[in-house]
Image (cartoon, rainbow, N blue to C red; front, top):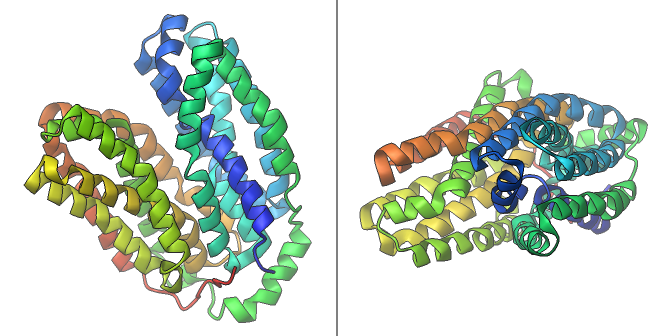
Length: 396
């Protein structure tokens, strides 16, 4: 069964909504939210970090449920959970209700973001999911481009509470309809599909039998790269200024990140899909350290190069988080395994803004040593994983 363009488009739009209304929400609404609730902005981000921890704990169970029943029912449920959490956020009256709302949103994030979408595709298409995974990340790569301006616009016209209610309404209408329209992906059908694809797409037994350290290596790679991505998302402008760039340059470089990510994903969709996902992941993991080295040596004139390389690497690595577990371990039990592999990444993601911020305050631009060393360590781990002869089908 070949990936359906309609399924990719619907799931991609639903993911754009999910990311824009959760992960990218605090950046625009934390300050007015904190002011109205009588707490500090760091308290709002602490509640968001708690949601990320909750999402890490929920991920494996959500993945196992998708393996057993298909993704449609799980994704439909997350539309309702997102709406409930956002409505609760809009009704919050203090720190306790703020944290309670983000706890609910954490459940939705653990069962309704990329990992769940990737697992849904694997149930539907098995080893033919690489193109579909790339397609979803291409669409949802614009989540911040859509989410940040929309949240800002709504906050300016209807307040931050109205913005939360509006996002909740979008989940109850657009998000729910998109997820309800997904194929059911029944277990029996998925099993037949995987069985029929076994001879063609899975010539070897699962790689987990022959690579006992592969799970550890991938978990480390995902944690390291998500730490880097989240740290840069939180601190890139201040980091660039610490390295000698002006405020205008820092803003310009920040604006390059999104297009660089999308451009790299287009490259992955075209040229790089002909090579093994491990090779493209190794190349992508090297881009942040290379860009950091250039910025460290040259300073402000290399700021744009650093931003483009970091964004491109991050764009491809987002796809790798979906394709590497599939090509290394195969589609059986993909959802649960993906959830388990992403637990350290979610924890690293929750810690990254605080920890990298401490390093930036203490060491200035030399904080890049931390992110660069993590990138190099990720490359080493990726080199330790054997290239399994289990090519992913690439036809669209």
